Amino acid sequence: MKKTLILGASENPSRYAYRAAHMLKNSGHEIVPIGRRNGQVAGEHILTEKEVKKEIDTITLYLNAKNQEEWYDYILSTKPNRIIFNPGTENPNLKKLAEEHQIETINACTLVMLSVGNY
Image (tube, rainbow, N blue to C red; front, side):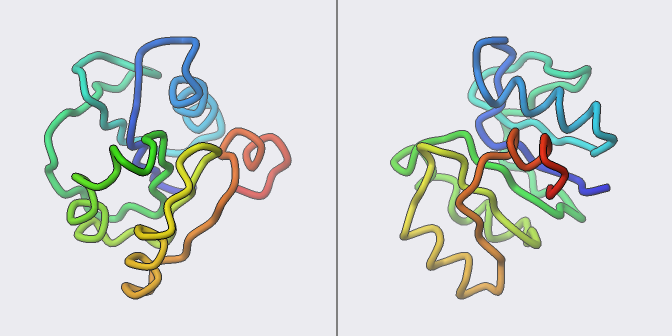
């Protein structure tokens, strides 16, 4: 199972980040939801601080490229194995930075990856 940090987490059921949190949890993955507002999703508290978490396998992004900029240092300091750029979050600048730090980058949809079994 892959410990996954959800950047852009939301407690709004109409958001893809909300769906991803539930789908990841239901698939047995540990989640670390981080968002702009406190709340809960999939039984976990949504964190709002940039406290570096250890042993993160994957960061799945639900922030657009402009909103990712303030998180660059945090993302890199977390040292994930990979970053998933969900549709609408593609960012060539962060992709380049991540690859310079030997972090795999994937342009894909977390929900689809989980659905087809290649997460």
